[in-house]
Amino acid sequence: MLPGRFWTEKLKSSEPDLEALGCMADREVMSVSSQPSPVAPSSPSGRKARVAHVMAGSARGGAELFFERLSMAQTADQRPVRALIRHDAGREGRLRAANVETHTFRFGGMLDVGTKPRLQKSLLEFQPDVVVAWMSRAARKLPSGPWRTAGRLGGYYDLSNYRRCEHLIGNTRGLADWMKTQGWPVDRVHYVPNFATDFASVQSVRPEFLPSGAPFVLALGRLHENKAFDVLIRAMTRLPGVHLVIGGEGPERAALEDLIRKEGLSDRVHLPGWVADSGPWLKACDVMVCPSRIEPLGNVVIEGLSAGVPVVGSAIQGPQEILAGTQDGLLAPVEDADAFASQIGAILDDAALAGRLRLNGRTRFEREFAESVVMAKWSEFLDGGLS
Image (tube, rainbow, N blue to C red; front, side, top):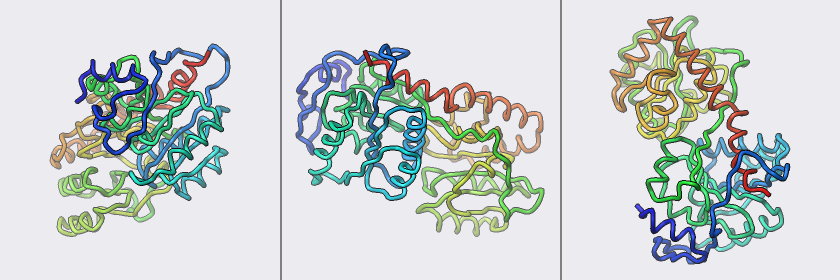
């Protein structure tokens, strides 16, 4: 952990000691403003700040998905936006279809010397007021220029990768608080959550492979050990007659299929792959569950609140913050299949409890995670430094 005084002094220097920051792979000198960029409720100039979003992430992932959603929403809101992304035909196509000005780059490793000058050329051409780097690789490639810089984090990453960023944005309060404990200047740390699609008007549709009338639990996410779907599968052995649908794909598919067979659950646990449109299934399910071992935020939890369905999450990081203890959803200890089964069963057996969680969860979504609320927070940050 970098001491706060040391880190603050380095931010105030126009030519920081990269060796002291442990930046052995990249010797380029950065420049940061000597004073914190102001952040105010609105733009005194009356115009919207021009923003360049830089994303070098993978084809799928929570941060990547929200990057696309935000870029599209800001473009639709008449904000000048340029998306600078790693080569990805699918992402490029989706962004261009939404009229987001999009440019692609290699974003390779240490031997990639071409991406950074191309980024700088694109940025100088676009003349952004703010450049937002999404995750570590993009932050490491940020060129200096006459713009404010921000790193947007969705996890507890090594902050030395963000040395070119004046500001940091965390998508949970816990993450923002952690950034401050790592020595980042308090007035340069900002909490701006993710928004999710509003499923209020979506019609519920049950998966066609489920028997009529059978209660079903829905989980969504990459089939990865961090998501702990194995724990949820074991919980299903304590819930006779209940079906589980896990929408997602990933490296743990074979292991999960073996576990399903071993537990004798082949007729009640279903792995249909990625779900292109999760809204109808979310609206139709009896309970949405996020059993993750690691989950800094939990976009699927927010989607569950949006759909107005009862949510059970693991008692860690993001889900615990989003569900506000037991007010907006229920929590279970990580790895505890019995506890997950108990919480799911409580919702299925108690209509009053289920109704309360539906109402509280939807209210929480509208108050903190609706698109209009989050867009206003982004505007407050982006436009506040204009004069």
